[in-house]
Amino acid sequence: MTDSQIRNARRLIDGGETATTVARDLGMPRATFYRQSRALR
Image (cartoon, rainbow, N blue to C red; front, side, top):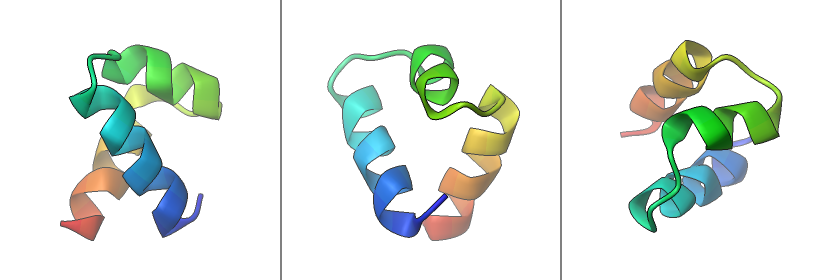
């Protein structure tokens, strides 16, 4: 997953989508999404 994909996913979450839904749409477990998202901060 690219940095820009993670940033776009964070925008979706900030806009009201759940992390579970966004992670599922990206085809990854929620925990993996959180780990990658934290790495960008």
